[in-house]
Image (cartoon, rainbow, N blue to C red; front, side, top):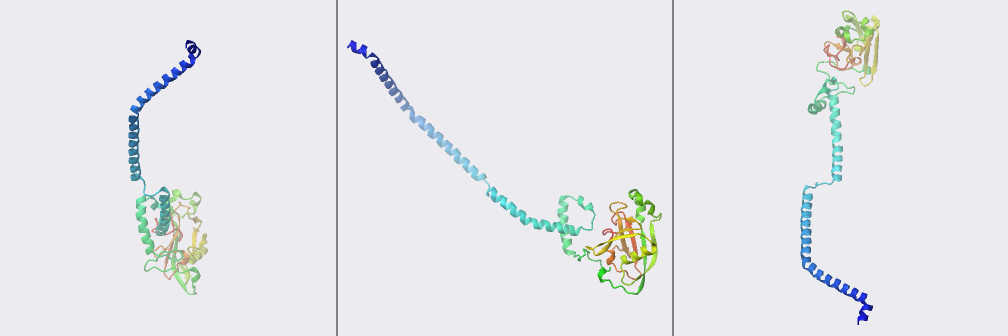
Length: 293
């Protein structure tokens, strides 16, 4: 027996150790088994809490989420922009039509004022009809324009009073082109009022050409199809812009500055015609419409 233990002592020791380990494991397993439900309960509780939080967050997200997706919102904006574009263009055209004879001073208005004025301008434009040569309605009692191609000039001789003045330059010598100072008369008269004969049916432009030819005054002009009239650029070598950016020639007939070109104004017997140089777009001579018309 002793010899058997000596011979197999290592195996016996190994078996005993294995048995001891198994016994310890069994005892430890029993202890863990007692605590296991608590761990499971704890885990279940955590999961329940997390689930409740997730549900709450989902409810918040659904409450605060936009009613439309970004794609739909973008599409709506584009359609709104397309729909509003024609209105904006229409307002711009109306504004331009209503203020075409005004100076750049109107550009200093605030944006809110511009919005209000654009509405008024649109109404004015609607009530104001221009002819095909962009002429506003003629004031009551004033002659309608006669197109150059429709002139009927006769041999009947009539008379009118004619003058050419650049008196406004005398008050603006500081901005006058230095090369033009010598041609400015001391009294401002290039031609004092004189009686001129003309043929019935002739225009203010026709009479101007005749007067300059008879008095040997230099005259430069260009025809402007859009207004169907000649544009007077210079008389006696005094040109537009020679005395500031708002300077040029305007004509007046019987104390009225016509709102159409000189080629379209038919002269009548006894008319008083004055060609005047302005340094302020007509503001310094009582005129209002565009220079040279």
